[in-house]
Image (cartoon, rainbow, N blue to C red):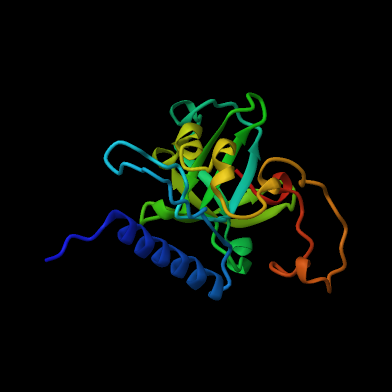
Length: 203
């Protein structure tokens, strides 16, 4: 069997990467190409290029809690209120993770939607803001993860130069509130004006 050159393997790999990103884009999902660099004199045994094959955008849900904690180990309850089932039923997109930030300490932990199993339950929780019970998804405290685990998965600023295209929105800007009409496509989703995360989500 003839030996395949590194350059040939690289070309085939780039072709597969481009096709995968194109497939995701065709499915209506947000994906970016890594820069396709061919480094002269590259030694595959000793050199490593940081450029990613692809970078994808995923959704996170951020929830502030009035309770004090700094890490999964000192989270003060045995269970975690993940989200209200009514709102989740209207979501068109599943969130990759739910982030819980402690208002007293400023620290945060998170839980991955990929970890959902039979130990996650649905219970009725009293919502003080709405004065009625709300069906809520509850997970065991043991499924909480440290902030460091998520940071290890998130693409760093120092490597954004290796993403093909404008990446400025990942380093600065955004986050402002804006008022839009219900008929605006941006308002579609849950079909209603969303209250604040603190008021809407219990636990």
